[in-house]
Image 1 (cartoon, rainbow, N blue to C red):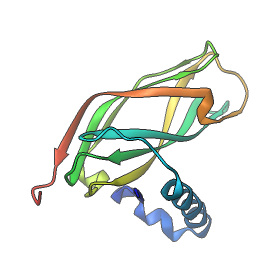
Image 2 (cartoon, helix red, strand yellow):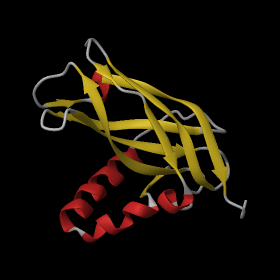
Image 3 (cartoon, rainbow, N blue to C red):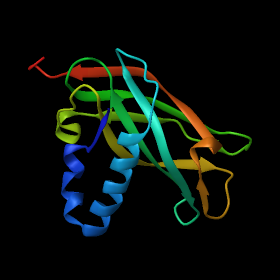
Length: 148
């Protein structure tokens, strides 16, 4: 079973009752789901995405799953996303999560992250299911805790 947590920088959000309830639902769903992860690396699981016309960005919720076998405290890489069966372009996004943001993420633990990513060519608000988009996490660099 993979445990879902918040990044250290976002732990304070649990003080908000509405957010805490939403996180509990995501946590339960994530922990009961069956995933096929690649061992020895960090895997990305897309959870939800919504485009808001007011800021022209795709608001993406994803989980970075530590399957390295060690505790990590830094994660860097390029997130490339695309729509399936749509021509609009989602910008690539460089992720640079240091220890101050991420904290310590043990093996078999997933960190919930929300990103706002610019999109070209999309009009109007849209909610997307994970089957409507995909992506990859490339050039991944991981920093390991000294306690490993």
